[in-house]
Length: 306
Image (cartoon, rainbow, N blue to C red; front, side, top):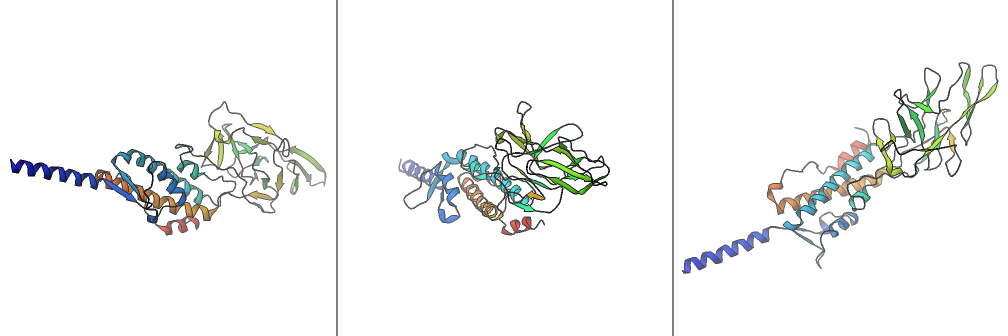
C-alpha cells in the first residue's frame, strides 16, 4: 500500500515537473525592440518584472507570429535590395507585424527623392500621385514610377524594358533629340534638322482610387491592377491634383536603407526568439522553421550588391 502511495506521489511530482518544463520565458533584454514587443503583448500580458511567460496554449499564436516575422524578413530584404531601384515603392512591414493587415503586404507610395540627371529622356513625377503607363507586345499594360525612357528602333518612346509609353510618342527621323523639351504639364516639343519646332504630343498620367488594388511586378518594376475591373483614371500632368513632370529628373526609391537595416536585424532577433520559445514548448518543432541565420554582414553585402 505504501509503495502505491509513494508511486502515486512520484507520478504527481513528475507530472508537475513536466508541466513546469513546458514554459518559455522572454525578457525584453533578450533582443525585443519596442515594435516587436508590441506583438508579444497581443497574446500575453507581461509579468511585473517585464518577462513574458509562454506555455503550450500559446503555440498556435506563436506560430502565427513566426509566419508574420518570416514574411517581414523577406519583405525587408526586398526593400534593401531595391534601395537603388528607380521609382521602387517600399513594403510597409510594420502593418504586417502589428496585425493591422493580417498576412497582406502593403506598400508605401510616398515620394522618393528626385535627382537631376540632365538626360533629356528622363522624367519624374513631382508628386506621389500618378503613374506612367506602358504596354508590351501583347498589349498588356503596366504602371510605373520609373521615368527613365529611351527611343526604340521604331522611333517611339520606350521604358528600360522595351515597353511602349502610353500614349505612343512618335519621333520623326530628322528630329534632334537634344532639342527635346518636356514642359511641366507634359507637352513635348522638338526641333528637326531644318530648325523647325513642333509639338509632338502631351504625356498622360494614370491614377488609381486605391493603391492597395495594385500588385507589384518585380520583373518589370511596375504595378498592375489585381483584376480587370479596376480601371485607372487618365489625366494630364498637373491636372486635378496630379503631379507635374520634371524633365531631366528621376525619382529614386523611397527606401530608407538605415531604417530597413534596423528593421531587418530586429525581425531576425524576434524570429529567433519566437522560434526558440516554440522549440522549448514543443521539442518536436526543432528544425521545422529554422530558415534564417542572424548574420549582420548579410545586410552590408546586400547594400553593396554582392
